[in-house]
Length: 116
Picture (cartoon, rainbow, N blue to C red):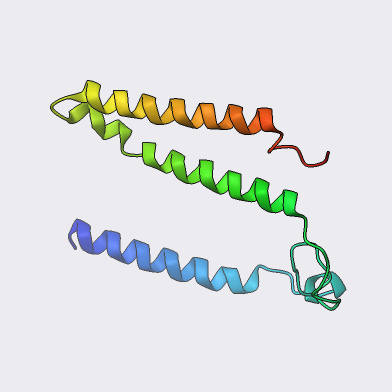
């Protein structure tokens, strides 16, 4: 047997063993908490007209905004392989500066406070 066939066989056997063990291993003991639906802390059987915290919504949007902006920096490690790596690092520093200034602005305006 060559090395590729051996590796494929090991991967298949290991996957089958793990799949079989995963059916036997968990303890099946459902209780009231496990059987109830989870709706982010809200009672799923109550009225849908409960007031929603606008402050929570704004903090969540700010988190998504800053989290997605950080994704712009993911290609940065490959920037040193370009013809002009200093230009890439300049733009990355500019993005980080804008993010930092935006975070400071939101902090000063009280946008990150949960309660007033």
